[in-house]
Figure 1 (cartoon, rainbow, N blue to C red):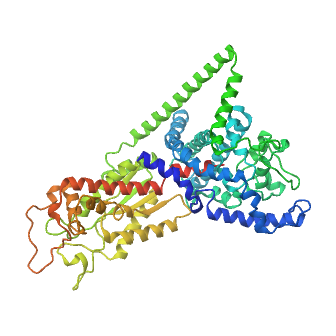
Figure 2 (cartoon, rainbow, N blue to C red):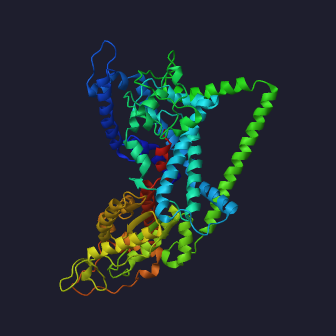
Figure 3 (cartoon, rainbow, N blue to C red):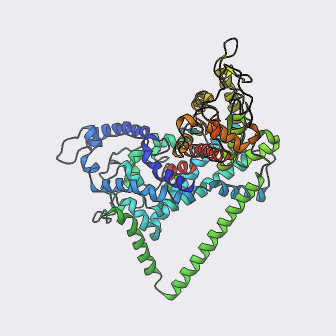
Length: 615
């Protein structure tokens, strides 16, 4: 699973144009293009658009200037974009997703220092807005302070200069970040985000939730939509003076990339410009300034190859360290600094692990099944971060003369707990057995033609699913997944999930139908590869179903079944005589793995974190 997670994260950034959590999502690019037209019109009217002695270019030629998009620097950006995901997003990010444990370090520190609050300071009605703003401020200050350090500390600058070596700016320049640069920023931003989470948790008395749009903090969504991609472009878009005092405009960030010494170390902010004003790094042009980009005017880009963008900063940093620690006294100081750093980091790591372990102990529930818990145990689980529920569906239907009517209940009842255990911080609702199985009455259809089958109309089934989901949302669960062990349940689950996800799209909610559990689990192909034929495998009460029940509850399979009445179908499609508990164990694992894989792809925290770290 770890390797699969690495691969998924390593390639996820390549889908950025269709993912709202990426800064280069298509809608963000369209928003930037619309604002570019505004900036283009202003420059044209002011006479600053054309270079001396040249005519004004048309809008498309201005935006898609060949000198920019075909430049060697842009090609470096593209190659760096493709390669960097494999190094940073695929591996380093796996070690940056322990934000919850870190949050609990700070939360437990607040409780032990100040005591638990008798009454929340922040009401539940305000907590979503407060946390959304607190998260934004934490991310933004983290981005600023790491950026400030990367410019002011020579050792860090050796790695950050990779970003500033771009001679032409495009949206892909965003990804021109050295992995050391990114890892440092990720650590600080994660730290401050955890503090924000713990603070709001302490003051509100409940696990914080952010106001989200398509999985993105609503304020960051607006920031991305309103011209973020113009920051790395040649398109000059300045804000009025009063607005520039609040927010960093695209023009201000372009000035930050300027190769003119008077612009060095200016405008280090991401969203807000207040940090630049507090630290004395604020700069706003009084009027349009024609800029050139790069490290300096004489040598804008010393990195001649993409490989050099990776290894050369290490070489430069090593030379810097050797020059500084070239005396015996400095060597002793360096050794002392390294010792303190290692001990401090180790202490922080141990505290984080202890807090995570304490949190784990606090949530050591008697069961992951909701029905087996008391209400106080459920509330404690919610308070400690249990934010996901599985809604398993089954059915009471015929499964041939040899398997009991509750086959699906047995299978999904077991598998849903296995899935929850692998996901972590997940509870399982009672299995829903009342599902559509065919028409009732004088002319029954489907499984209702066999004695004992229970069927409810599809709209009723959908209402049950929806009511269960709304109940869980009321209690504070953020992720709700429908998992059905019967083919007849799949479409209704998908419809309900789609409706609720659309209704709750402005919240930090994720509602989804986990169809891979039933449809794309690889069972059929696995049996074919073992030499079984399609007819032997079958589609109902054949090898697969019977084997699963033999593995999970062997007594539910009749060794000497009562035969079906004469001239009546027995309800079997396949050859159950070939079933075995060994096959059932493999079939069960395939279902569980398929569900876990799909859920992790839907709700990858590491990917959600990455889109806010790429500044």
